[in-house]
Image 1 (cartoon, helix red, strand yellow):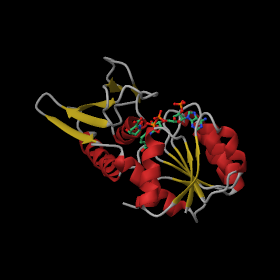
Image 2: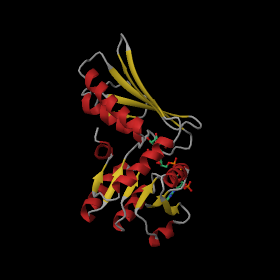
Image 3: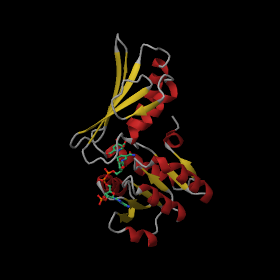
Image 4: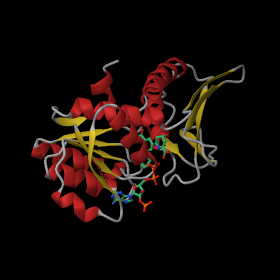
Length: 235
Ligand SMILES: NC(=O)C1=CN([C@@H]2O[C@H](COP(=O)(O)OP(=O)(O)OC[C@H]3O[C@@H](n4cnc5c(N)ncnc54)[C@H](OP(=O)(O)O)[C@@H]3O)[C@@H](O)[C@H]2O)C=CC1
Ligand SMILES: O=C(O)C1=N[C@H](C(=O)O)C[C@H](O)C1
């Protein structure tokens, strides 16, 4: 496959290496300074890991050019419904995941299972921590938001997530920490007066995110529609 990279920062560079190792070629590396090149570029699929302010336009351009697009950029999801609608209208292919690593997607399912179990017992409260490197633009992380959505689906006492400390029982508190070089750590804590049940996912590097994104790009090449990890992994 000939892959267009939209965003050539930390993730774009690792995705390039993984893609080359898997026998693909790179059609273009589009970053903030060479956006105009995108107008003339041809490729089989685009992988978009850029900036919360840039993702919407990048994905839109791909759909309008009929290029299947795999997007990993977080922090722009308020506008995702517009992209979903455009993708359906143009019969395009758009894939979004807040986290492309296999481990995190297993972790999402484990979290939902625990939320369902503890949600039946008023003794348990739940909160979350996410820890990332200091260059991260958005908070809370996209992964933390997906985990929170998994909790909110099953724990009916929680009405929404918040990113600052709260003493309201109905708020699910996601605490964000920014520490140099941390690729991504997520913790969900189910606590009662008697015990704690805590699950933790620690990414040792960005390798899992990049490998997952390239594998999804291989898969999406001949697909149509608005797609996500549940379509790809089919757990
Ligand atoms: N879903 C997942 O599995 C994962 C998602 N992410 C997400 O991916 C995104 C990128 O992460 P990361 O690579 O670490 O970030 P970086 O800041 O290292 O890289 C982003 C790159 O995109 C560039 N950029 C900015 N605007 C545009 C634009 N309009 N078009 C193309 N490129 C642009 C930036 O340039 P400049 O620096 O000049 O602004 C920068 O080079 C983040 O939103 C992050 O949260 C990260 C890891 C995994
Ligand atoms: O910005 C990052 O680095 C990461 N972003 C994603 C997120 O916001 O969840 C995925 C991963 O945690 C790394």
